[in-house]
Figure 1 (spheres, one colour):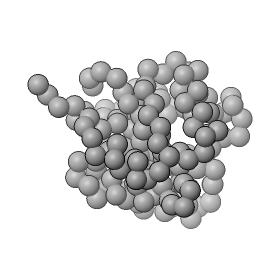
Figure 2 (tube, one colour):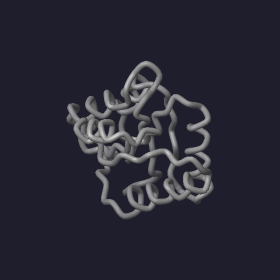
Figure 3 (tube, helix red, strand yellow):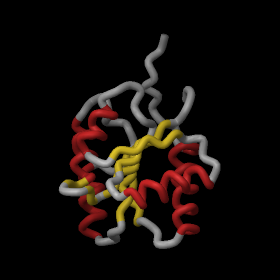
Figure 4 (cartoon, one colour):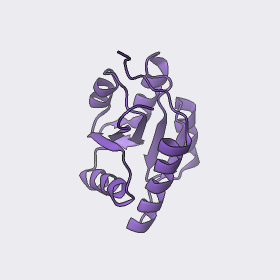
Amino acid sequence: MSGVQRVLLVEDDPLDQTLIQRAFERIGSAAEIQIVDTVAAATEVLGERPHPVLVVVDLRLAGESGLTLVSWARDNESTSTVPFVVLSGSDDRTDVRAAYDAGANAYLVKPSSMEDFDDLVRRVDAFWLGACALVDDTPSG
């Protein structure tokens, strides 16, 4: 993998944006977190190269579903291998099923405490940015 590992966070709640970004910082992650708050902004970012190595998307964004983004990415040849983690306040089985049906790689429920948030982000960082072999689409040359 080359250079900085960029994570795209698609989250419309400013508090959750801050909690997630600061959790990555507190755990000492080397990831660069890029934040957008709409599906449209996320598709714009994903239209650029290199793609983020991971997308963390909220299930329920203002007026739209994060699953719209997941489905779009899975149907797009250039983003079909980018891992998507759905992060939601809902633990409803219907929501979980819908996320996996849309093509999400993981579904995580937002924790209620700062310590649990740090633990969750630590696990995401260790697994997706550490243990997993991810596609590197950085242009060569």
